[in-house]
Length: 112
Image (tube, rainbow, N blue to C red; front, side, top):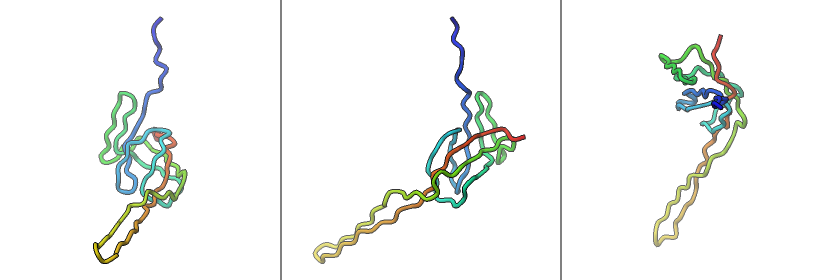
């Protein structure tokens, strides 16, 4: 009996969020630098739809990427700064925590 290919063709894109580029696919959730919006609609720079590849100049105008903010303020890990001077008793320990936004890619679809 021949095998049938029931797997849905994978579609992924490269989008720019906050000055950085990310490889995204439908349903992905990941952290980006803090942004203060609830929904975003972006034009991707590159789209791979099954066997077809679309490269934008600079953006692919036929496709649209819908992004939803799951959690707007997520604190990252603390980056430790430790200062110490021997024989004087001086030591200082402090560190900032970066803010991130958890986003989810709802869909990557061809715009009409």
